[in-house]
Amino acid sequence: MKNIFIIFLSGLISFSSFAQKVKTDLLISDVTIIDIKTGKLIPHQFISVEKDVITGIYNKRKAANIEAKTSISGKGKFAIPGLWDMHMHFGGGEGLIQENKNLLPLFLAHGITTVRDASADISNSVLQWREEINAGKLSGPTIFTLGPKLEGYKSVWLGDIEISKAGEIPKALDSLDGLKVDFVKITDNTMKPELFLEAVRQARKRGYKVSGHIPSSLTMQDVMAAGLSSIEHMSYVLRAGTKNEKEIAELSASGKLKGRELNNRILADFDERTAMKVYGDMAKHDMYLTPTLSLPHLLAHLDEDNHQNDAYLQYIGKGLQKTYQMRIDRTSKDDKEAIAFRKLMIEKSESLLPLLQKEGVKIMAGTDAGYLNSFTYSGIGLHKELELMVAAGLSPLQALQASIINPALFLNKKEYGSLAKGKKADILLLDENPLLNISSTQKIYIVVSKGQPMTQSDIKKALDDIKTKMASGL
Ligand SMILES: [Zn+2]
Image (cartoon, rainbow, N blue to C red):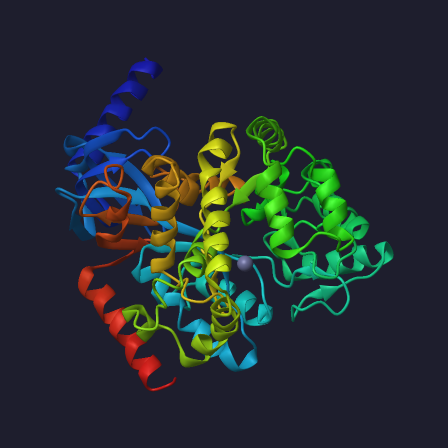
């Protein structure tokens, strides 16, 4: 009798829930979802969003029961999770804090809903923006940042935590704990190699992912054994593919081999079998790679396009633009031979991407956009990086995985990486299928960031606002 009563009662509840509309903040209707893991297209889907979370994916029949405050028709559109730029820099000194802050809406307007700040000299501001954005007080992409990076004493970089002996590592990491940084970065300008390895080991022990540049005297095996989690830039994986990396490392560290001579040796000694073995080991060690193709590619082709007339410069502050000059000056000194060699190096580096992918190294899309790095732009730059990845031989799906799935895996953020119930409502609606043409990531219809939709007129307004701010020097 009791059981029958319960069945009767639950029948009543389900009947009443059917009759009563389920209320939600946002409903995207009749859209084709792209499964970024498999590349499968799932047509006629309805995505419901409550605050900043996806609360369900439904078919038409089930979605009929949903009443949304805001409805967006996704008919004919393609839905993917928001894009991540996994290597950019906020920086350039105290005087450029406002210009950096102005870049935040530029990311959102281009569908970049998350960035990984790879450090510079305005960490306190970046940490503050991270909190304000998370609290909904500031509009911008979700920021993951390492705060100040670790370096040796008196390096070329400003704003780092500088250490010169192993005893200083715990205190340095304590201060990063205090800042609640999202990962740790260690670079090699004046950092002693042994200290570098010890800092990697200790940071890993505390549970941090550690990214870095590799000191010239260390091999890929050395940093893998210490537990380095991600490598920034392609030059290190190119060198790791040489038959005698250890010898080249020693010659380079002692200064006996440098500049073009060093690079010539690397090109001459590169061996695909050796490279495959090392890349396979990197994958086994769960080591990620952010190739940052954009900047070296762009600098190698500066003789063909000097970028002085890029329309996008109207979104970049004058102070930030000034910081571009150093690399322009350096590159324009190159003679014909040097230019040709630069192109050769970048072509060789880019050609390694499919090999790395095949061996299982997880690749992450990052632009190196920010101060110093001439003409690789915050926002649009990520789309250019994806195009370069595909031109280098990755499939459009693999390039999208590098911007959507691998970053979330790297930072262990389970609430990102796909469009599914319980995931963050960072959603991009595109006019065209990016699996057919990666440039279609630029055909943005609507950006949803933390559940908040930006329509095309919102995007236009955001871009116009930035332009006005830049023109008036604010
Ligand atoms: Zn960088």
